[in-house]
Image (cartoon, rainbow, N blue to C red):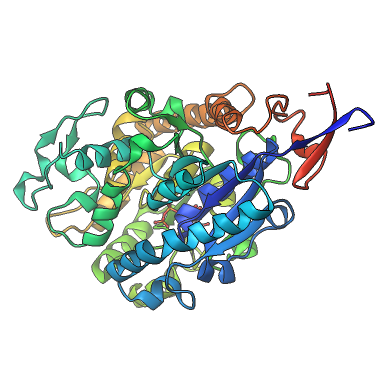
Length: 492
Ligand code: UDP
């Protein structure tokens, strides 16, 4: 340019979302980190998700949103009627629709990288057609991923359904597992054949991916991260929770900014407000798990018998399963039962001393990042494996064991809560939890392992050698939020 300035194009990344809250939140948070580092981000949702997705102000102003078809544009997953029908059609329609989107986008601007949810491995082939870097994004732990990798390699037989559940299995760089610690999708009962196939297929073409990004942090799973790095280009980039709960470098990033449910913020934060420090048990089973009537009843009376305050999230469809007079006895006194809350704020609240959790990976990482010891009550999918780590590896919780009917009884609930809240071992769990909290924040901060991994990842698709990455002090998007940033030559 005549005035000695030149146009530097911002690197452009498409982020392809799988339409489930537990998958969208981590990818959205990762996108915020990319944006902060000067990358132009276009989120790609299914058409149905796009209609329902309410993004926060920051995402709306700094990221573009495009859509593809999953074959169910009017009703998404519900319209499909079954897991198998949804996956079959999405796999058929999705790749073509994504290819058309890439064609359209590359007419008007460049695309440098596709980050795709690992549940959608076909996106890699589409990215390769356009000679674009392809990065698989895994929303579960490195350890769970490793187990699925072994299943994909044929190194792991289906878990027998019966008495063998306590027999042990050894896999490289992982602790010794009882069969019952393995993800339920590997269970020979074959209850969820479509999902079982999908989690294993995440690894079908993994060696062709340019990057494998995992929502975890190195210090949390060092052995398995090292082991995987020798097989595919793994980088841990998490925990992907809002920066204000970790390194505090992204000033406006204090919430996921996306929720499928209405949060009862004031009610629950007011209720927590007058409770003594560390006195409240927070109970949630996430957005999907559905407990049977027996389990709801046992949990309810176990909470009551624990004699601790409790804040229990019971989603609307679960409410009829509460014991008849339970709310009359406990609501607003010992306990508060609501349908949804701002979980991060709750876990961060000084009144909360313990988290009774289904061990979904997001909830687990949130408790790790906020230093809250857990009572693990895993239900299905990766949750049993996460529970094993909470208890035996990170030593920041206990596992509530189910009886022979698969029910965690009220005495067990009470005993586990009292152990975490009142015992000497509980104090040690809290100390461990605080150690993990500090390590999580460090990983995301300047110089931390996840921050460095994100820098390396971004550097791999920066379009111009002259274009150095800004990092927190000098992000490229300081110059412009537009497609191109004009910068003085020599200043980069
Ligand atoms: N969550 C929330 N409010 C609630 C309960 C859960 O915001 O009342 C959020 C929680 O913070 C987490 C997500 O819902 O980010 C649940 O994800 P997870 O992977 O733990 O479980 P899933 O819902 O996928 O089973």
